[in-house]
Structures are given as C-alpha cells and as structure tokens.
Length: 201
Image (cartoon, rainbow, N blue to C red; front, top):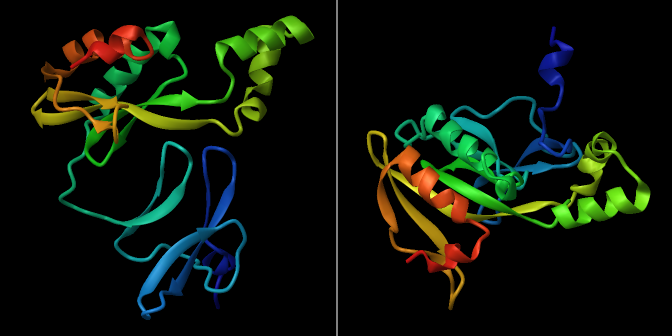
C-alpha cells in the first residue's frame, strides 16, 4: 500500500514564499530534463532524482543541479565574517553575501525599500519603525540583487578580491588584493556604494 506522503508532489517554498513543484520532461532531442513550475502538472515528481539537489539563487530562482562531490565549498565561518562586516556599515545593511560556486559573492539590492522611500512612507503615513517593518515583505516583493564584489579562496583563510566593473562590456575586474579574509572584508566592503568604490583598480 502506497502512503499519501510517497505520492504527494515534491514542492519547494522559496524565500519569497512562493511554492514550486519539480517536474520531469524531455527535450526536443529526447533527453531527460527537470524544471520547476508554480503548479503541479504532467510529469510532476514525488521525490528528488538521485544525485541532484535543489538550489535557490539570491534572487529566489529555484533550480535543480547535479551534486558535485568535488565542488569547492566556502566555510560557513568565512561567509559569516563577510555578513558580519556588511552589518557593521549602515549603508550596506540591505546588501547580501552568499556562497556561489565556491566563492563569496556580495550583492547590492536593486529597487525595494530604500532609505529614501522608507523616510517618505514614515513621514507621509505616520508609520512607526515597527509598522514599516511589518510592511517590508510587501514593499520589497520585487526586490532583486546584482553582484558587486566577490572573494575567491586561494588557500587556507586567504582570498582574492575583485569588484564588478561597469565600463564597456563590464564584468569582473582583475584581482584587486589578496590576503586574509578578515582584512580584505574590513578594508574593501565599506567602499561599496561610495565614490571610492570606482577608484579601486
């Protein structure tokens, strides 16, 4: 007898509270492919395929990827150090840091509840800070993030830092510095969002 749990569609709820269901299908060439959809339809799965894992991007995009046992992973302590450094600076409190493909990526927000908008809402609607925070999930529903700085591990406790460039085709700069993570974080992260960021060469 099959249990209800075993036949229930596999679902995943992302950080924005949206539920996605994993499906299997075929490409035009007949190869098996996996995808997530907001509703459970033909090909919905009840379990993860062997050797795969669910991942969610900084912008809450849900996907399935093959598990790589040899993939470089960022130590949780190192990621925590970078996040703690962002919190230290008021102008970076809306920025985020995440581990992406073996690197520590720092993201800046695009849209959402900026300080200017928050001040306007408080003044116009006489909201308290607590009331504003209650409304934040709705006000930041369309918030997106874009990478602005990255730290690539080079050896034990040491990283190489680069920033996003915006001239020409853009892309990552060459290495700006190399050294202990804590020193790089305290020296360079605070420059994100300031004029000196663009002087980093």
